[in-house]
Each structure stands twice: as structure tokens, then as C-alpha cells.
Image 1: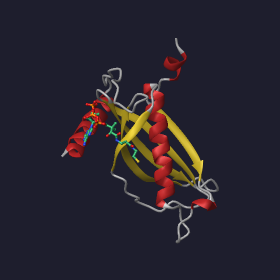
Image 2: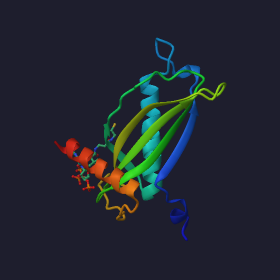
Image 3: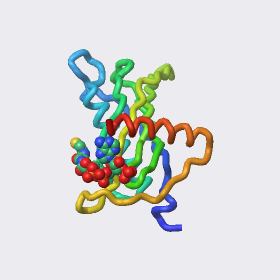
Image 4: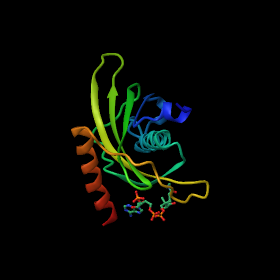
Length: 152
Ligand SMILES: CC(C)(COP(=O)(O)OP(=O)(O)OC[C@H]1O[C@@H](n2cnc3c(N)ncnc32)[C@H](O)[C@@H]1OP(=O)(O)O)[C@@H](O)C(=O)NCCC(=O)NCCS
């Protein structure tokens, strides 16, 4: 098994402590700080899955359903939902936890559309992936619907 094969995974989870340098004018975590973390997670998930550099083509459904508070732990759970010829959809669920009392909140779910590119930033083909479980098939079908909306 090569090093890349051993690392190849469709899932990536990252937990970050929300610190005071991330606040907006109302004292909660700045939306831009969350977007930066989401982009990092999507990038890391896509690159680790494909073993190549990837760029963000589009982001879907960024809705901040609830404010994120300083002092909370934000966990970003990412998964490759769909693999096209050169594109990947990365779905990210964000859950926050108050580490003092363990209270958890699902604050957002969004979708990043990443393209695998070579050193000249030209799209490169990905290894084919076929969803097998019912859950994977459902995620794949939902991602395809979103891809169509993106093209519209
Ligand atoms: C991502 C990029 C390399 C794609 O280049 P491109 O010439 O559109 O590439 P292609 O036409 O070969 O398409 C590549 C894939 O993107 C998909 N795609 C491109 N535009 C799309 C759109 N508007 N809607 C849906 N899918 C799209 C294609 O379907 C294809 O997917 P597939 O290979 O899995 O079938 C190019 O758009 C780019 O460099 N964008 C800037 C990326 C960037 O800088 N991101 C950071 C933003 S701050």
C-alpha cells in the first residue's frame, strides 16, 4: 500500500476552539472567520481524497442558522459526496459544543464544489468512485441535483 492509498479517505473532521480574535462587532464569531475555516476544511478533504491540488469552484447553501460563540469548540465534519470527472462535492456539517456543559448545536451544513487541478491549474481527471451504500447513493443523487442548479 502506498502512502497516498493509506491516507485516502472520504471523511475529514477538524475541531477548532473559537477564540476572541474571531469576534465581530456583536461579540459572536465573525461569519468570515467561519467561511475561512470551511474553505480550509473543504480544501484539505478534497486534496487528501484526490492526492492532488484542488481549487474551489463554488460554495452552496452557506446559511448561518445560529450564532457561534467565543469559547465554543466548532467541529467541521466533511465528506466527499460526489466525484465527477474532475470535480468533487464536499459536504460539511458544523456542530458547536460548549466545553463547560457539553451543549451541542448544529449550526450549519454547506457544500463546496472543488476541482482537482494540475500544476498549471488545468482540471485533471479523478479516479472513478461508485457509491455503494444507500446513504452514499442518496448523498450522490443530492449532490448531482445541486451540480445542475450550479450550472443553471
Ligand atoms: C475551477 C477551474 C479550474 C475550472 O475550469 P474550467 O475551464 O471551467 O474547467 P472545465 O470546464 O474542464 O470543468 C471542470 C469541472 O468543473 C465543472 N464546472 C465548471 N463550471 C461549472 C459550473 N458553472 N457549474 C457546474 N459545474 C461546473 C465541470 O462540470 C467539470 O466537472 P467534471 O469534470 O466533474 O464533469 C476554473 O474555473 C478556475 O480556475 N476557477 C477559479 C478557482 C479559484 O481561484 N478558486 C478560488 C476562488 S477565491
